[in-house]
Length: 472
Image 1 (tube, rainbow, N blue to C red):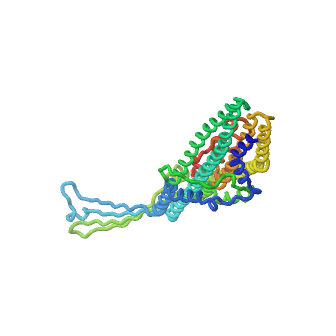
Image 2: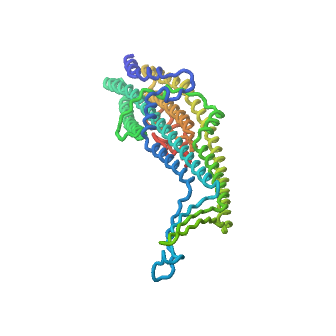
Image 3: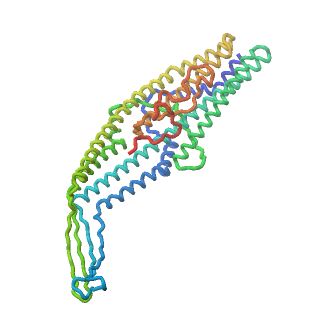
């Protein structure tokens, strides 16, 4: 009985934590920024100090400066000249037809061209403004992915420490039993082997923790290796299904790519109108003064008009070009809308699957694996099963708890991608898992997130994601 009590006491921290983390029925998760002060602070710092966002905002201001340039009149030209009778000497003031000339010429576009050019430039600035929103959404999503990845790793480290407590006590007990001839040497060796495996896994998780910390510090503009204390845990997060129609309507209204594509259609239409207006000639007015020395000065006023004699090769071709570009932009907008629809429905199905997996873990697997471990532990004390069976059931329980962490992280990854309105897939939140390969035998998911298609369809994202959408 003494052995059983020692094992149970050594494992009590893990049992108590598992029971404390057992949640109530799933409900809608409130926005993380409203309930997690650490995450809210990280997002705020990143939006305030991230250089990529500052770059996007500067480009918007640069594009806005194009609008008055596009609407301005062409620069006037100043011409200086002289007209002289003969080549022997200057005859200005002596001959009536000899004079100096000062001429100013101002080009004047056909009415409406300047306004259309300003409209095209203004729509370009609007597209740049949409790009700022895409950068903002991407940064916020990257912070959340890195933060929940950090929670995932730290949750796994806690599980590892829980198991280390049990194995430390188990090793001491098996060694004592072996020394008095009541236990097998294999039990002692297996306990030592499992402790070494835990040390190997701990190094991997600690390395991954530093990776996520580095990603968060980079995103918030910090060059130092600043620690980030966390109090939240993945086991406490609650979710509810994502409504497809509501999410689709919201995504269509807020998607930066779709907004940019629709603005591109308007810009192409304005460019087409401008190309049609360019078929009309431009004008120029000029005025000149011709001083003649001591003689009465002369003056002149002129008016000129351009002749679009090469219209078939230039202006008409430009109209055809812009018409094709307008059709291309219309197809682009339709394509973006179709991809957006696809991603919303994909994530809804993935999210439903993730919630189902979480429900199975919370309502079935964790309860069953804990009960199996407790029963096997009692049978070991009675001498009916070997120590290896205790380790197997322990590893199965720890693996199931690690699997719950991975499932929750995957559900959070899907929800983040939905908030980001990501068109390229669902970047996974992943970290080395406490799988059977590390823990011995026992059912568990692997170290990657469960069924999470990333941008390339397979690559897990750790603390960061690349350009999250189609280029604008």
